[in-house]
Image (tube, rainbow, N blue to C red; front, side, top):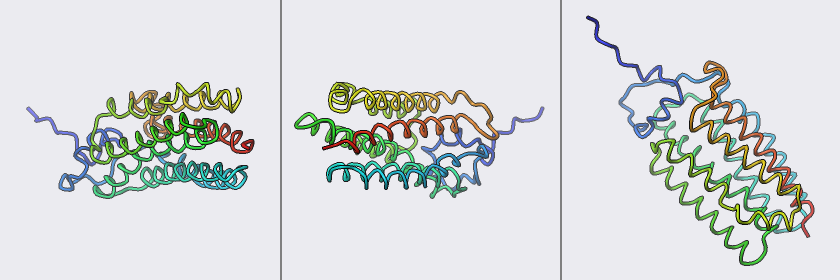
Length: 244
């Protein structure tokens, strides 16, 4: 009788190994690099320069000083999201560097949510309601970042809903977006949110997974984040270019 040979951490699929990353700092385990689809990270790597250039234009062309500041925050959080994601997913890192980059990658999801809400809130929701939303969403982002940094091994079923819930936290402010921004802006906010949510669902359940060798479920997730960002960018542009 031949004893079963345990699966070697050297050949674990990238996303299976990610699910064990509560043990990511364990340098003594001896894994080298995870197996990952060949297109892993290329979508976000290609998106980064486009986000940087379009964000600079958005910030420069915003009509008010407040709008320019808010758009700069949005651009910075977007560049962090796509830049760190590309670096993390394209590189073959050792255990310690991988653990640091994974923490940053997941923390940036909370940042992009707060960053996206920043120009929408500052330019569309005046007074106390706007301050409530802005402070609330950034407080949630800080709490979420601390959660992912200090508990990097949290299970997907726990932290993925946190992203989605935070993204929809402003649902009660949608009438404000409609009243001040119009139908087109509201549609962009909702459609972008739905795309992010579907992406989160794909990430959480790891389906569909069309080609684990080339374009797996994580690439589907990244594709949906690109589409969601583009839709939200259009909505924020409509707001920033017409603000008074």
